[in-house]
Length: 263
Image (cartoon, rainbow, N blue to C red; front, top):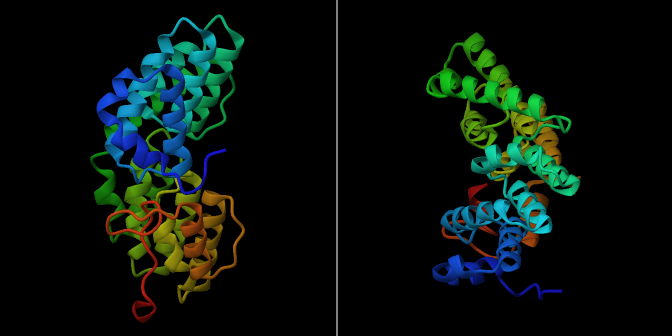
């Protein structure tokens, strides 16, 4: 077992110039290290590793293809969706299952192993995103309650691009209306992306009880942790999960807890 003091992400970042020479096994290990230790080694590192792992999907060894599909799912690599779709019809059952799990992880939905159904769902998600992505930020920022609620309802039902969508929704956590903050927490929980966790923690002390409860529920859903509704408990958990500081951030790229005088 690796010593916890070892920083796999820092190690991978230092080896970036030689990534193209990595063997399949080392490359997949690097991909899983990015997932397990967090993205603080740099987005460019994760992108480069994902690109290299995608190349393994055409390997002649089914075990390598399965491992690559699993790694890409763990990385939630949206660019691998079409490749994984094709693997749903691979002659090897293990490869089909790994590709299926990878797609489920990337898309955040539990569709069955049915290639036709997956292709239809992804086509619909892409068509919606292409049509609506440009207008959504304005609608989510709208002061018109009906416009905002309708936009949030749409976002909650379209999960393929959920990472980008969760960023837009997380901006609503700073709105002055308690009902909007509550809805934002609920939609973030539905999208299932953990990136907004640091933005949710301060809302545990929101003066509106409904907002605080929604924030606690979202934190539990996004992390799987059942911690007390106390911000410091959550900051401490994030620090324990990954103690490496990132630039202008706290543990593992998470935004650090505000100093006591700032709270």
